[in-house]
Image (cartoon, rainbow, N blue to C red; front, side, top):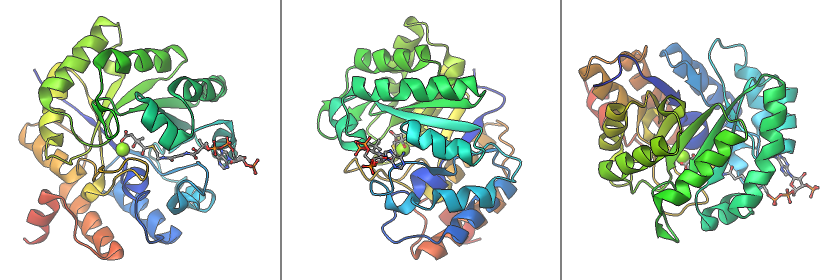
Length: 298
Ligand code: HMG
Ligand code: MG
């Protein structure tokens, strides 16, 4: 069966924008987040408190966060280490996300650490966040394929999932960072996670649409029992430290499918499309989302 309701974890302002070469003005980012909230999204990842040299586009996190923190939505932010957590807590963030890798190559490229060194870096972050009653999401990248290592063995992914949950993460997001997953692989991973006693309710899925499989993969995950889906308004995105990563699953494409299935998301599709069309104008190029294109020509 399918769930009655799906929670969309909107990543456009973070995963979507982090790869943009031209600096997007802080006021435009804040307006983007506000419009996403007005369109009915209730979990909107706002920015990252990472090293500004590593992700220059999000170097304005201190300026951006206070411009949106009055919104009555959940505003998770990425924090790679205790320095990032300090910065986020100082601004009153109540939800943070650490981001691990299932592969050594990406751990090195994205975090300058081995997989286990990165986990050791997250441990005090998660412990301190939980002590302050801050919600912690654990991202896991390269759950399916890796640009340097190829197909990623399922047990390797399960091990890091287990480690993130054991250190206290409230939820996990299974990342197909470069968009190579197909539905059978998704089901194989979800099944192995269940065998490893990872509760399906603690899992979200995070698909990039490189090969056009993001929706099929999402449907497979929903049929398995997953109810949290990451998506990016207008299909913005990519990852600066993973070559060949294209945009995330577009939130509009997801909402179109879920509406058709009678699954509630609370999102007003017309307002969301208008937001992505507006953002595309700011960025100077059309949205890659098929649904945005179809509905903005009406
Ligand atoms: P490092 O160079 O090893 O850092 O980078 P370090 O720990 O050696 O520290 C070096 C200096 O950086 C120090 O300053 C620190 O204070 C400073 P110094 O003492 O030399 O003056 N520093 C910081 N400054 C500000 N904020 C911080 C911070 N941390 C250290 N948080 C580090 C290690 C983790 C910092 C770096 O690799 C980094 O920032 N990486 C972030 C990369 C990133 O954001 N990638 C994109 C997000 S992941 C993603 O997109 C995938 C996802 O969407 C899921 C999917 O699709 O798979 C989530
Ligand atoms: Mg991503």
